[in-house]
Image 1 (cartoon, rainbow, N blue to C red):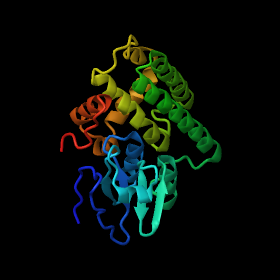
Image 2 (image 1 turned 180 degrees about the vertical axis):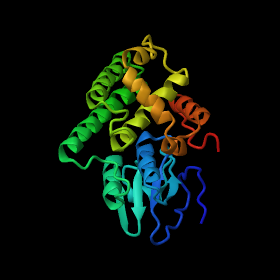
Image 3 (image 1 turned 90 degrees about the vertical axis):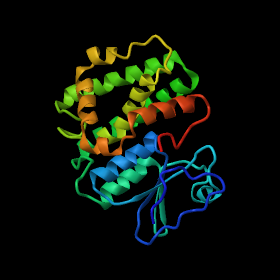
Length: 243
């Protein structure tokens, strides 16, 4: 069965799930869903996607997730919620290639970085919602830690010399910030180019991630992402933009 990429809304019927099929419930521009997509693609795991309208959530989806959030991974009679939980599961269930460090100390350091990424998400979401200059400043401040970490690691990426779990957990936020700035929605006084001059290792990492074949497979078209950002900030998110 071919499932439409358009978001399922109130009044829609739940598409049947075949036995043994892995299904990701998501939203095309959600950074948390993007995390899971990156891990699935990096491991070449077959799956199908059902996109959800988060402003008009179908009743059948609310039975799966009472809060109506995405991502949610479902197969047979099993379900998993929360992007980090899902990505951890996928790395254990499908071990090739491993995305987390296997050495315990290195893995612990990686998880600290992911925790800090989550804080960065929080600052970014609040900054966008409230157009709060101080919260945008906090986002840029968080970048300083990642510049120092790359300097300490002496690697191109946070997981080594090629992207791994930390990189794929961090990238959707950076990507979202990039498209938000490109949309012209930010009216503050912070100079985004300062990141380039003050944090060369982080900027080199960003270039590497943009060119990463897994990112290219998973990332929405720039024009669609920007148009979605504009619609979202106007209070009428167009989940099907570009389709």
